[in-house]
Amino acid sequence: MWERAIAHADGPLPGAQLNAMPTPHGWCGHVTGVAADDVEAAADVIATAYELAAGAVVVHRTDSDSSFVWAYRTASGADYHRQWPQQVIDGTEFADVERLGAGGSSLLDFVRLTEMARKHRAEWRDLRAGRPVDVQRFLRRMTRLRAGIVDILTRTQPVQVRELLLRVGVPAESLPGDLLDALNYPTKDMPTLPKMARSTASAPDSDPTERIPLPTAGDR
Image 1 (cartoon, helix red, strand yellow):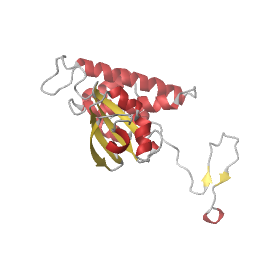
Image 2 (cartoon, one colour; image 1 turned 90 degrees about the horizontal axis):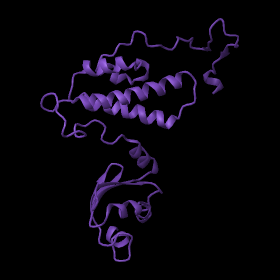
Image 3 (cartoon, rainbow, N blue to C red; image 1 turned 180 degrees about the horizontal axis):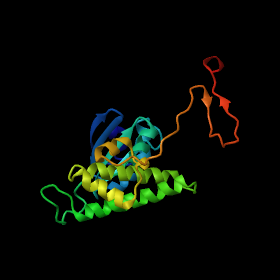
Image 4 (tube, rainbow, N blue to C red; image 1 turned 180 degrees about the vertical axis):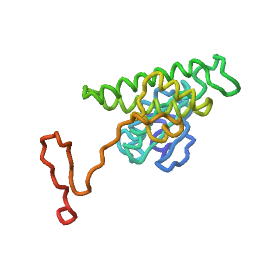
């Protein structure tokens, strides 16, 4: 299909070579022989040739003359890929910076994690206060902070990450449960949902709202 629809002389990427392999969600492959900009511009044409949904092909450049293509069976798979935080704190961002021990973290790693934590804290406070929040930006920053914590935990002690987040003021309720466990994060002040009766949607006694019975199995 690639040679017939994409790489032929009159195709969008003449002479392009694809080294592809299947994935659980479609296929992926390394493209060489053409400029990365041309491959990015041909993403929708590739999707059409392989009978995929519009937007279901993601292209990442590896250098100016090669790129990597992910083709997904669904547009949502490609959208999820695009939201994935690429190269967060994987140890290669600052190759010329001295690290603490072999494979350890650097001061700049912690500076970057601190910046992520401050942005997440600010978004969380706005959300809890009922102020307007760009939900997509909130999710992106939360995902990036999570990825940064997971990455840096492979090269440093949990106590260092925990103390950093506490100094920034990141509340426990704004972090996923598995990270709370991994960091042994203090949760004693974390708000919890009040217990509710099984058959009643309850409200505080001071709340004038009438209590509404929950639907029974026969009502559903």
